[in-house]
Image (cartoon, rainbow, N blue to C red; front, side, top):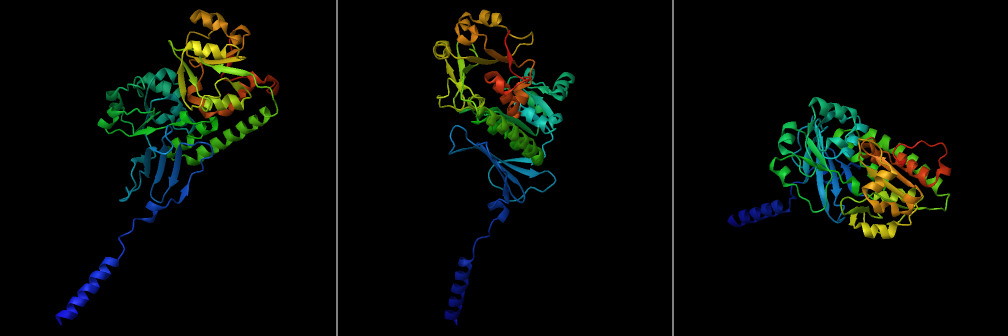
Length: 376
């Protein structure tokens, strides 16, 4: 009898060992759908039954993940099983911006009124944000590199959107347990790739369909302009910006600016610089390479008025040595008067049209520029 009991016990134990472990919810393992991302390379949006997962790739090392966000609807109970990542309840109702370009995206999505704080307010031209700063309903958070944490806490945003930088850790945010969303759109290699980050921002506002509609229109216009340029073989040389102190920051050949210039039918003199971001150079190095370039494009911020050739020469006498200066082929954006930083990255088709009208005016007859204007 004891023998039979022992056998039965062993059989039951064996059966227990062969039972599979409790499986995780299938929605946790398999995405129901993935958002179509055609040009942007640094983020992925996956939709699951109970949440949305956004993966931001490390733009400096594509084998690594920079951050992961788990978006859960506010009107739903938080799922018991979730993958690793920063949980964000959506739709977001209060947002702070470290850069105006991200506010521009929210403005396109009709959500700029949700802003409660911004860094460097002088770069914001969106009326609802300017009014909020004026009447005190939107906090001035100071410099993006040294955000006023006390004011940020008082503003109480659901999320703070920042542009990440390589090897930079913001430990001050960890101390206050603030949800920081990293938008790495500026590291994209193409203008359409950067503009497509509106889909990333839209995920936090539940405006996915609107973002798709906005981007589809941009894509169509941009590609039609590229087809126009493809018909010309003439590619004038161009360089960009000006020195800041002793340093001249040069956009890499693989940057979105480099792609802009290529698509506009120009030959960027730094096109072989294998970088997506900017690289610091001395004035001498830039002067040596750019002295015979046909065109010079630059941006500046001056509320007093537009820069002139005389003012540029007075700023630094050696600027007058460039061929583009001598032939009066300098075009610039006064960011104090233009919403370029907020809107420009979101309408690359318009920026491209401006550039084509500079390098190939015959392709854009009667065109009225929005951003770039010739120096006087």
